[in-house]
Length: 437
Image (cartoon, rainbow, N blue to C red; front, side, top):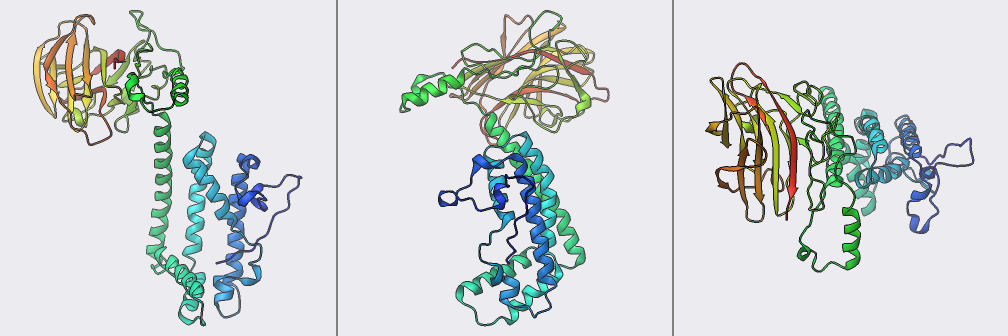
């Protein structure tokens, strides 16, 4: 269907670029003339034009025809679809180079645009006119017939033949889906923008032009840790959960007073009341939540592994665990493997967990201990080890391989869960992730 090409009068000399012809080579988008405020103004004006044209069409006293319902030839000269024009630019920019302001505007506009689309496609009077033309049209050209068929089928596929209850349910589903789809796209883009590839072997750069290598080297100098100031622990350590910032390629990101850096992610929706960065200075504290196995544990905090060879180490204080509680360091692909501390009959033990199967090790005699996983990604070999002083580590269990499949690559992280009735607490500090090759 067609719409009138009306341009609103602007009180200033500057016009919204979407309201007038671009006058650019090949009608390309004049990005240099578009301001942030132009988008919302153009969207709302496009909706207003659509509604005005809808009212004109459904209240036309003449019998529905191809010319006055599907395409209005009197209004066709110089026509452009304002809503389609601004949508094309805005949503392409949103998916390619968004920012917080564009994300907020997309969240605001999404339900408005979905409601508008439903109002157009589910309008009974408009569909009756389209249906009449589809059944009683004059002889049309092949192009006109294709346009008419597409228009009619578009209404049908959008729910025009549903009853009133079905249309209302469709409205609810499309509005919900539009917001969820938008949130997924924004999260995916942020994840892609946060990705970092760490290369320490020059042989992997064979074939790249020197200009590309130089540019990547300059970009690699930008710190990967969060800018916020780290917490201080009682023993004088510098970070709660940190990573080595040496040029060897270590990553991970510091945990500050409010939220971890980009490297850390919750593996499930978190229970915010069950973790804290302020309850104990220098430590991240978790209230242990019920779960059957490590895989099902809540408030699991993880990050991706990088490089060919790396090593993750964390300090753990398990003195507040209750019988049946478990907590520690995990390494996972399609399998969930962990080394940690559990409490049984009032005593704390090191233990290993493999896909829900637990194996008790020796007693943990000190208040704090250190857990480590050494990773050889190229050889798919992983080894857990433990220490009571953070200096001398001993291997526990045998080296293991991971099967991938839930996501690209493997992940390391922290976990805790309770199998008994009374759940305690656990605290972590001094996380380091060193990439050695």
